[in-house]
Structure formats: C-alpha cells, structure tokens
Image (cartoon, rainbow, N blue to C red; front, side, top):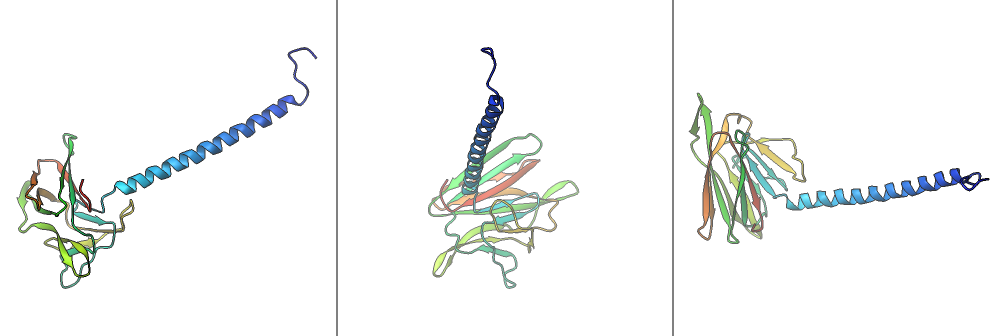
Length: 209
C-alpha cells in the first residue's frame, strides 16, 4: 500500500459517517426552520387587529363571533370588546401604487363614521346615512363594539389568520368608502377622503398604537 491508499473499507466508513453527520445537520436545520416559522406565525397573529373593515366589497372580520338579532338586523356587535383605543386607516391606491396609513388612538375611546358611495353612470354618489362604529355599555361586562350599517350584511365564509367571523355586503361591487371620519374622545381625530382608485382598510385595536 502506498501513502495515498486508504485501508480497505475506509471509504465506506467515511461515507456512512458523512451521511450521518449530514442527516443530523439537516434534521437540526429543519428544527430551527420549523421553530422560526412557528414564531413568525405567532408574531403575525399577535400583530393582527381584533377587528377589520374593508371596502371594495364591504367586509367586517372579527376575532370573535359577531352578534345581531332580528330586532336589530343592521347592527353587528362584538360583545365584551372594551373601549376602542386604537384605529389605523390604511389607504391603498390601485392606480398609483401609493400606500399610506394614519393612526389614531385615545385611552378614552375612538369612534368612526364611514360615508359609503355608490357608482351610478360612472359618478360616485353618497348613499344616505352613515356607517357608524361605536362602543356601548354592557352591564357586567366590558363595552361592546357596535357597527351599524344601513342594510343587512350576509354571512361569509370564515376568514383566515385566526379570525372567526366575517360578514359582507352581497351587492357591493359598485360601493366604496367615500369618506372616513375618526374622532378621538380627547378631541383629536381626522378625515380621510377617497381619491379615484383608493381602497381602504380600517383596523380596530383594544390598545393605543
């Protein structure tokens, strides 16, 4: 045997050992990736607002079931929500690609009014009445989140991302949010007016932003 030759069987042992090391490394890497993906998902869920409202097809999604009754078919409640302390309004313009968000918060409460518009013969026109979002007292519990809209919404397939309930307008292909007015109980707030191509998403939080 010259100095460059390996003992018989060494190559097989070397291959088996290498394979074992590679397998162990791959398993370890897989565990790390799984943990990272799980944590990433947990962080995503932690950051999700409990309630969102979207335009384009008027949709409300909630982390808990929404309640409405035959006596108040146009009112949707998330019971025991507590005070609305934070509101974030996202504006995305599908024509320009511009995306911005405006934050409002107040430990004493935030209210929102939405002016809906319908397109008739190519012109956006106000729909009578406002969509209102308020909190109302609930005896023996935290305040209820209450959305009131001028028509009954239809039950939709359950949303993703940890929310459990979803309602939407069944005839909203020509409806948009023309104006959003946010009022903080301390006197602050603001107004968002729609430009052509604007889509809105309003996120509601139990804490200040």
